[in-house]
Length: 207
View 1: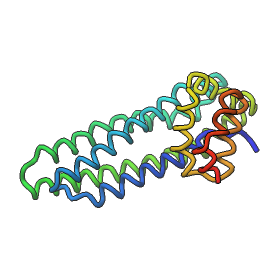
View 2: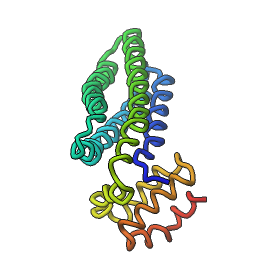
View 3: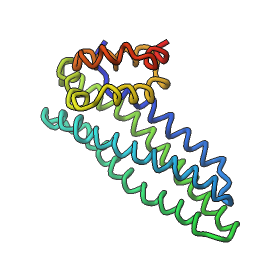
View 4: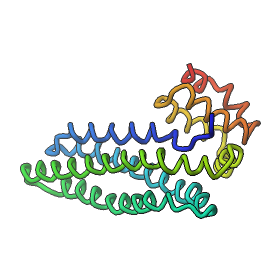
């Protein structure tokens, strides 16, 4: 089986849908509920920004080196996503500033619609990366070359950081996805792999 990037998209998709459901249920007249949704958004937006940055810094240059342009649309989508972040931030802030209950509800409705559209666009973006960019990377590079892309990341991560990463990702993945992550770590960082493989929390979520 070929080396595959984007397995973490299963977690990204779940996180997007989870927050959409939370915002859908939020009573925007209540500060406490709005604060919970906003806190989740802050965490999600930071994760999405970091995820896009990784792809721009590690994956897209691989395509550029081979003269491929298949990633350009995804790059533009990243820019559009960045432009949407402030709009969602502003809607959360507007709700919290507003004192009129009816107006708060109206702003909340706009926030939900804006975020739902954002989710839909992101899901299409994930689909494009997996169906267009991934096959191109697999065509242009060997499995060994693709696997080594992660070395720069894993080499600076501690075992504790790797375990924390896997604990976040693994609940959203099937057995093959989990095995692929562990095989990459074993190939690139064998000493760290030995410590991670024997960790009780990792063993429990592999079951």
